[in-house]
Length: 157
Length: 180
Image (tube, rainbow over all chains, first blue to last red; front, top):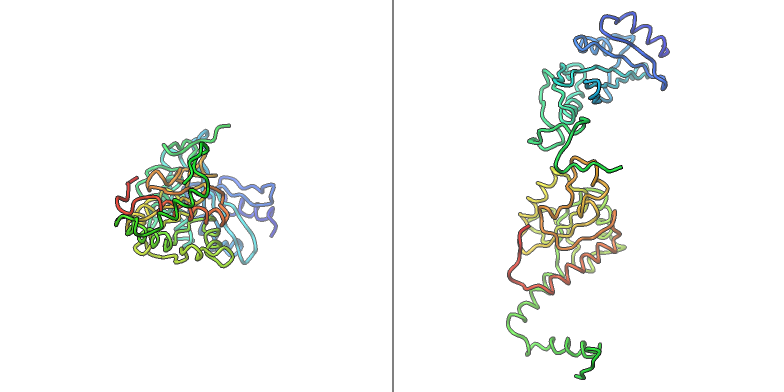
């Protein structure tokens, strides 16, 4: 199945769960999910044999302060079909909150802890949502664009 | 001893040093101090504390080609309780800073600290735009010798070690140590 075929298939089969599907210049399929259908979409992508994305290879986030959103980015990989797919979800920046995908892919545990640590996204239902790298009492989210700190020296241009 | 306007000649300095080596002319403190300092400076046991690429150079210094054993400092200890030289080799983040301070405080005194590499001296390449790296470990542990470089070559580290040895020779054996 080529990426174009995959795109049309996702658009027709899962249209009530995705906002839009695109094929990027790097020939990757980008799926933007609806936030409330995120978990069921992840389950479909993992379990349906025509997708079979068994492996979550990366889960991270991007901060867009101008658009007032934080985008969660999941990179999925299918060993069976040797195919990659990028799944995105837009979250409200003031209160970023999303159910965990730890129940779908176990490896999401530490990825989500990292996103929680650096972006402050809360994952509902996560089994162990603590900071993973920064000190436990840090209280800030350093990869947000508006981050400032006393010891943080911005490089002058 | 001849006096000249140019100050003491090299031979005069040598003579002075030779005189000071005659044990009969020494005070007790000086004699005891000599032994203490001799023992201390030739058996510095470094703590095995490498956190980044500087640790590779530290390992090279300990290995055969540069051979830190020539200075009696080859016994890298995995426990702070057995070490008296802290070679902070590598980037120290805020979270690691707590561990470093704890390790320093667990070392029996007198103990010495070498800040090896740009990162431990002032943050190094992580000075700008870094939310984790400590901008110099001297903000929380007292540093005796700074060895600059990114990372410093083994010769530099050995030079730093010799500076520590010189420092041990020059300072009194009691009344150590200031806090940061």
